[in-house]
Length: 258
Image (cartoon, rainbow, N blue to C red; front, side, top):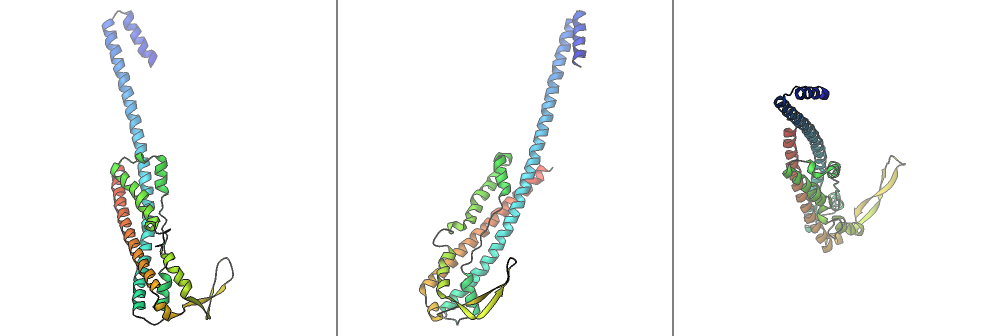
């Protein structure tokens, strides 16, 4: 093709048709420029298509991780609420000097339970490695970053209570060791996949009168109840943030898939 154009230019010059040569040369330049622009446009289109495809993949993975994390948090909320209710009842039963019962025992032993939520963050970690600016929607990118780097991290640390003295396990566990004793008249067998069954003895509350009048226990139960309430509030707010980001992702996916 290049030889063909070169031959035409050579013929025009040899025939002394300088004006036609200049027009032809100019036209050839224009054609070359148009060809370059078309090639650049095609290249840009291909790059944009690749970028959109990558965004769709990232958003899809982020949504999947957030759905799983939301399910885990909702499950924890349900368990926390159940214990919150039984702990409230336990405080009332102690105040009213209710008689020793299995219900009191169950409420006491569950009052120290904590549920560790591990947010699924593999998609966000992958996004950080690729580059946060891969996501073209600035406001959504900020919401996603805040959710993973602030809300979920704070929730994972349970409002900073894990290492603090307000940790619910640390608050209640000393009283479990203080008042629970093994009832050797009630042996129970437990089986495991990895070994033969074992025999353990049910526990019961000992020194019940002292238990009912232990002011330190009452303070620990009330503080633990308050802490659990704060955790439930934080978990509920985090679920709302997750729902908001999931909605934003779904709307962005609709745009990218058009």
